[in-house]
Amino acid sequence: MQGKSWNSVWAVYCRKRWLSKIIININMKSECSIFFHNYYGNQDRWLEFFLRKISVPSNLYYNKVDESIYNMERQGDKYRQKYMPDTTNMIRKIIYRQSANKGKDIGGKLILLDAYQKLDFKTEYGLFLHDKKSLYKANNTDWTNNLLQIADSDFCTKAIQIFLGHPEVGIITSTGNIENEFSSNLRSFKSNNKMLLPQLQKRFNIFPASFQYAAGTMFWFRMQPVNTFFNANPPLQIRTSLEIGNITDEDMGSNTHCWERLLSWIITAQGYKIKTI
Amino acid sequence: MLNTIFFLSDKPIIFKRELQRNKDCRIYCAVLLDGSDVESMEKAYKFFSDNQENCFLLLIKVDSHLSNLTLEIIVSFFFILSYYRSDGKLLVTLVSFNDPFFESAKRRLTDFSFAQGIENLMINRIHSLNKESEQSVNSKSRPNFIYSDTEDLLKDYTTILKSEMIFGHLFYLNNPQIDPYRLYNSIQEIEASTKSEYPVKFEIADKMQSVLNENDYLRNANLYISNELYNYKEHNLMLRSSHEAKLLQEYYRHEYENLPLWYKRFGHIIKVITGKRTFGSLFNDSVKKYKD
Image (tube, rainbow over all chains, first blue to last red):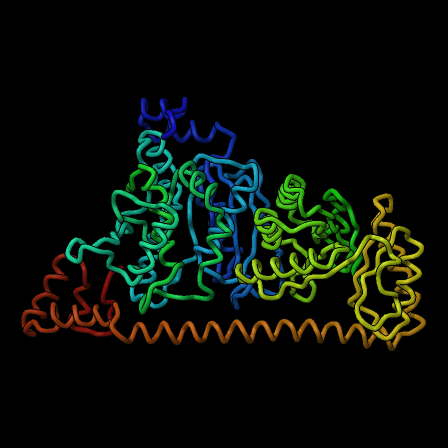
């Protein structure tokens, strides 16, 4: 784990929200990389969302699915010119990508992680987000709102504070979004992915102490363990195994849903813990 | 512009903003990278990620078998928003004189792209960067035109405009000294003068281009709508079968519906007392029931 920086010493010492906010803001370097995957369009709305909400200097990695009826806007990519990042707002850079609908949001996030690895804009922390609409779930709106609150400015500040003060924390998400894949009654994995998961764990050597994971794959995380993993396992190679289209794991397991769990486990397997706010 | 011109360069170049933002202008950068030079590829990747307005195409020199790493870097370029697409299809040009190396590179690129969900990759081949080695302007198949001189290019461009198929051709210009802005103006002049000579032909070409574009758009829309309808159908099936909506319904029935009526009515009075329901709504259905 990384040693405490000057910033972290201050944050732990002071434990004042307003003070740590100032400390974060005076540091001109981007602290966070946001990895956002878009399938359902509304680019304007999402870019506004990030410019309005994010309170930590960040680089936004933005992937849109081009094979989506929601992304066939005839006005083209005008939104990109409308929302130019600069040093006056917290989004310092926007790196756009587009892809086929492979591996749902996980596939998109792997493309963005590939871009992150190849570019020079390294940051301490990362944030996974996507425009989630689990239409097959009865409580989909509540769930999405609960997941998206992790981008609220208060949540951002709190998350950075926790990372600064608690080096053992590797993942932060909102309360209620942590699930455990392991069933103590069954003494095995409980989802339909139980056959695939052990194979992938073995292949990629991912053995966490606990099988908790951030459901919905929207969470704050430390970049260092993620970098360590993806330096050895290129994201695009992993992406080749993901399924095409908007698949679910309601009837049978999928590599895509396995990686929903593994993206948390690659961090916790390196000794980090999950915290909810 | 009716045809596309690529400026060949071994380093990524950036055009003037007027050219980048001009929708009529189809002059783009084609960066020539050595298939075995990882460092140059990484530099070019960073450049185009930083200059996202700059439409570009990759030309990969293939003198040996492509390594896994270079293959992966080449495919990474395809996700960049400003990568060149011809009729919605990604295009990459391989420069190779060697048939086995070309075939191997073509197959591996196609396979790896397909594994990334890219089903419409077009792989173009140029044997060398000399014009003589490629097909002639009058060839019926779509040739690769490579020029080092503006005059030659403009001459052939004019010939094309007088031929049967006047749009959709790709020209490569291998001379960094030429000013793309001046070239664009010359092309505009040529197109304008040929148009005055053959107005009907240009009108038909213009209509044909819009019809083809519209056709592409509608074909894609049709495919994506079919996919989305399938998704909705599946989601509905899940919701109706053994799923959360059913679980919620059962929970409601067991926890609330089974209670005696007097108990439920008493519950509503408690709601009014605790401020969760309006008093008026107990007697009148048209009164607002809940405060939030």
